[in-house]
Length: 80
Image (cartoon, rainbow, N blue to C red; front, side, top):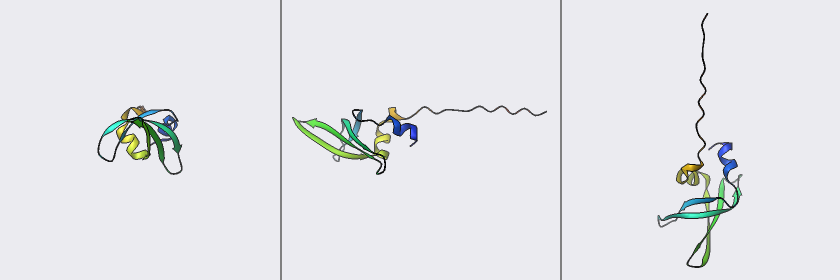
């Protein structure tokens, strides 16, 4: 993960998470801990607020839209 990707993580951002039972659904980032490399997320289920911590690796694996486009540098070498 790059610094650019980390800058995309902000409170209020809607992401997908995977629950311990394997279900995938959306949640909202409520806190970002750069030092510990995780986000806290919240969602509502049956009228009750739920939450969990999601590490950066799992977050970026499940949320491919947060990947930055690859930048290619073309270098032209000219020999004289």
